[in-house]
Amino acid sequence: MDMDKLVSLCKRRGFLFQSSEIYGGLNGFWDYGPLGVELKRNVKEAWWQDMVRGHDDLATLSGAPEPYEMTGLDCTIIMHPQVWKCSGHYDLFHDYMVDCRESKKRYRLDQVRGRWLEAKGQRIFVATQQGGEEGEAETQQRALKFFNLRGKDVDQLKWDGPLVLLTAVPEFSRVLGPDAKELGTLTPPREFNLMFKTYVGALSGEEGAAFLRPETAQGIFVNFKNVLDSSRVRVPFGIAQMGKSFRNEITPRNFTFRSREFEQMEIEFFCHPKSSPEWYKFWRDRRYAWYLSLGLEGERLRLRDHDQDELSHYSCGTADIEYAFPFLPPGEFGELEGIAHRGDFDLRSHMEGKLVRQGNELVVELDAEGKPRHRGSGKDLSYRDDLTNERFVPHVIEPSAGADRATLAFLCQAYTEDEAPDENGKMQQRVVMKFHPRIAPVKAAVFPLVKKDGMPEVAQRIYRDLKKSFNVFYDEKGAVGRRYRRQDEAGTPYCITVDGQTLVDQTVTVRDRDSLKQWRIKADDTVAEISRLIAGGELAT
Ligand code: ATP
Image (cartoon, rainbow, N blue to C red):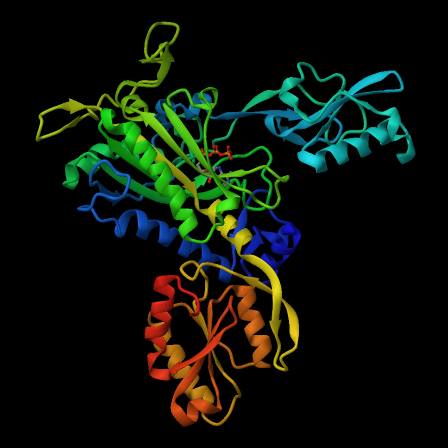
């Protein structure tokens, strides 16, 4: 699929706009338009319904060791600065960046690759931000230019091997930066904390300094005790939260995939340490199945267990759910969600102070004077099982998803070009967004075939009835074929048309977006029929 086509459809039909576009836009920030806001809201509501509200506390779900409870929270974006000191974000949440003195551009070190080559007696490393074949083609073009060679002289370039990461290059004097014309213009890598800093209250000094949250998870940990004391939940249980997070990404790119302001959907699941490996597997598989159930294709979606050396300092196991986004080189996948076994790292950090690993143990990190580097809350965040009387710090499984990345994956998956007959039965090219009916921004469109003979009145009555339960669109302008086409681009799964026969036998036509099948139902049954189709995610039979 051509990503440019999707990006332009998103703007043209009102899924996504660049933030502050009339002022030239702001890199890394995106606005959801009239269709986009409905789509993203449906993604978030599907998650909340399937994981939280609709969860059956009494049942043992397939793959789960026992029944569990789910509850929710909505915490603030700005929290006490100590939260980020104990969580590790203050000291550790950084990427490495390099600057280019020539182009004035900034790059994330781990996103720059390149190839070594020799030509005209000189050995250089040509850097690029692209991967795969595109990266190889780009480095070749730039190497030819650098050595003042023409396309037919390509044999004079003696390449060392495939693309490797810039992290593998110890020193940059022989490096041709991704946008540079001269060698050695990249600065040595520097740390860059990704948290946005702000100031609370009238104090502008460091006393009032605070951070915009880079993840929603910490709000859940610091409220663990409040939830336990105010509701009757018992371990095992999960707390879910969705909301905005902020990261000052060095190189935001790939549409909304890497934004500076984005929304997360996170669950912290608290369980007994002994059963935590089973719960980790349960959540990994359950979350993977969720994306499939909403229409992501198995071949483009994969579950990847992290290698031991990829795990965070606290994690006993992590898996990513990844999607083959069309903007990535073939064979590469981008993360939609991470499912991490976090042990007792978070709750203990907020009790005792910032922890570090020492051998197999997690211990409080000390400063030069032997005092805790970042002091914890001192509150007891352990749990007492009132049946067994056992007291323990629960282990945590964290399925952490991005609402914007999920929405982007659904957009990419939905984009389809195929053919549909026009009014005269002639096949015409169409663009159709094949969203799963549950997440489709508009569930149904209602059309009177013509604007006379009482058809608009009947259509408007059906529209109003449907509006009580669904987002529905009414359209009486232009040829009906063109109206269908507009709904196909919006991803509306069902169109209902009132025509001459309606006036005779009170039936209307339902048209299915994907199969293009049409069938008649009683006008009075429209709400029931659309409800049935949407609930079942069912297409025409
Ligand atoms: P990446 O390696 O891609 O930066 P991450 O591993 O840092 O992601 P997490 O900290 O695990 O991401 O965040 C959980 C989820 O939040 C991610 O799986 C992703 O869906 C979402 N997310 C994280 N950073 C961004 C971002 N800059 N823009 C959009 N979504 C994001």
